[in-house]
Image: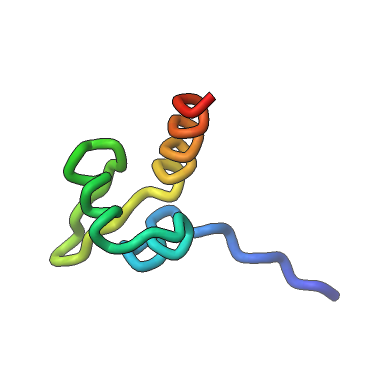
Length: 65
């Protein structure tokens, strides 16, 4: 019997976000600094909500149209 796929992660690391957007670390931190990509810090780790990445993509697509 096939097993169900695990749910997608709620929070992404900076390297995971870099891989999704195919950009470098500097670009991700620029997006965070400019408040275009929300993030939170847990301990010493920066995390980016997965839905915030989707919103960023949608916003950028709308602006480009």
